Image (tube, rainbow, N blue to C red; front, top):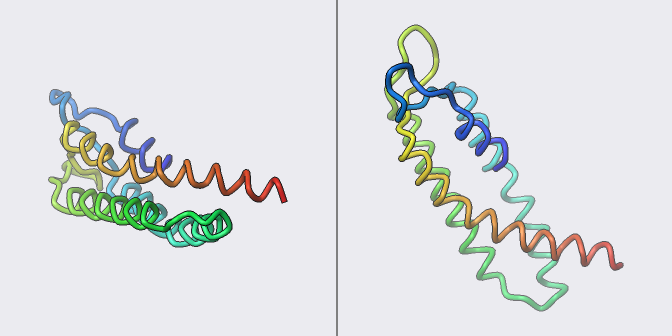
Length: 125
């Protein structure tokens, strides 16, 4: 998520259009794919942690669905974005990106809290 967040928040504004950002299409897809690829292993580790603490999986399930839904939405936004002439960058509306990132962040925050508990459990053993 940090890679995706940094890519989108550090994107350069389009000249003469400060509310539009330029993002390399390939870099955006790579960051989205990396976030999707890391999710199953993270969920598996957190499920193990929850099983040792007798905690239910509903929070993980909801957070995972929220993240995947947000990543799919972001992927579709990048796919439909207009290209910047003469390169492989796309134009994205700043507000649209921020709202999509805000859709994804709470799910990752839930995972971060669970991961903290997971690492505390492992450290105590």
